[in-house]
Length: 275
Ligand code: ADP
Image (tube, rainbow, N blue to C red; front, side, top):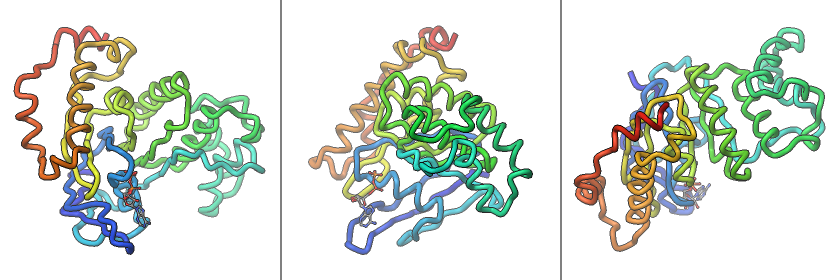
């Protein structure tokens, strides 16, 4: 049973903007899926609908297991500036009525998982951008979610920090066995992280390609430098540019296969990259 199924979902905002049109997406348990596309193609709208923050106009959205919890991580770490790291991480548990004593070990564990031991008593102003994002991730994982929604969480970070957080996020994903839906417009990040990349295009927001990233985990720097990675990059960047081309408004995923009739993956390079 998929973790989340969107069936013929459309979303038209009150001002008439068609943010999503006939979106069909089935997301398996434990999948790391990226929604990749230019600004305005409806990626955040998909996350908001899954989170129940707004209603779809038509269609159905089904949770495989309605008791599953979700956590949402945004581009801005959105921390309380007057509260310490520890207090920021505790917030969701505090809001659900749990005492400081009852939450102490969960908070400590979450902080440890994002490598922020020793910074518990620091305030956000004392932290770097990457550390603030780690606090935001700890605040998400303290609730022990099964589904993690991430909306361009590393978009405002420098390349080195982003790269480190990408690796650490993958480690966490493997430990926690989350289903992750990750929004990005960064092709490299989407390939490195995901086992599936869904490419979206705008006006109206829709899916134009669904690409399996068939490389083993854990992923390494060698994977980023491999010919397989470059092949995925070419496929996705061409798809994005075609999807954004107004002359190709009727362009469909089927065309995508025709554009790349013979782009075999270099399996040798893939396994080398995985080592
Ligand atoms: P993305 O995350 O891919 O940048 P969004 O889901 O934020 O895209 O937005 C998709 C489209 O819907 C955009 O054209 C955006 O301007 C529009 N939109 C988003 N939220 C609203 C809203 N609350 N009211 C009207 N239009 C909106």
